[in-house]
Length: 327
Image 1 (cartoon, one colour):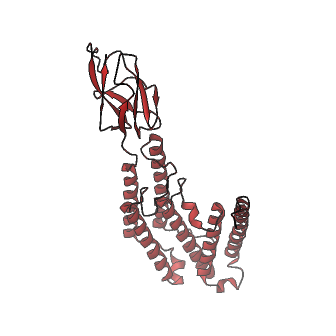
Image 2 (cartoon, one colour):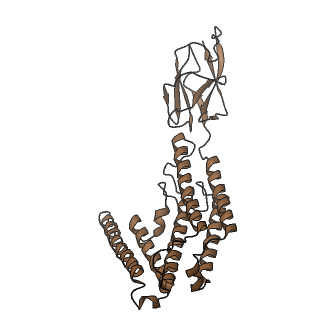
């Protein structure tokens, strides 16, 4: 049977509305359980871990309601359709903290305490802060590089992933950051699971300081790698529209990966940039007017002077030059 292009969006919309409604019910029910946990006698008999699982279920339903599907990882997909490593580690830590917070709250409610965890540990807050800074920093770097043309995410095949770069190759900085995130998260949950109820009542469990340092180094390396990584192909030029001409002649340079607009790019005569803007500039052709004198300030040598023309595209010079005779 052929796919139904009209019915599919309706189904997705209905699924999103359904999951949003269910999520709202679960979240409200969860908070009611929390609020009534010290007043209803049968509630304290529930295993506190159930509260953590209910909180995770609420987190899951809210996540899928945002993306309109059943896969919560849809919230960590970037605008280019690739999984975002920084968003994933933020998503992971949010899920862990939601689970542990509900668990500890339930243990304390079971012991007769009321109210939230006002002794929230410093390292847990720092871990969440690391995640927020990494997400914001990675986004800022990507947006800046996209605007300057230093990277290209033009909707091509989404080969990048959690552990690989945009070319589909393993990215050691991503691997390092996520490995330490997985280890720290697993160790933290394991630590909470093996603490007694009395210990959880006395003090909210914290993340080990050594793991915090390793996570910080991993996230710093990840952001540092994004700062120095570009995937823009090197510009190349192949031929000129004319090989000779007098001042005022319009010359077009043909090539590849010359950038969508001129921006800070330049036409070079013997390595010296022309003043002013080119008459047109796109990824495959640049047009300019032969100036009244050499860009270095000297008058043209008559009857003919040969100059070498290159392009400087976003700080990268073409490897080849093309000769042009000024007559």
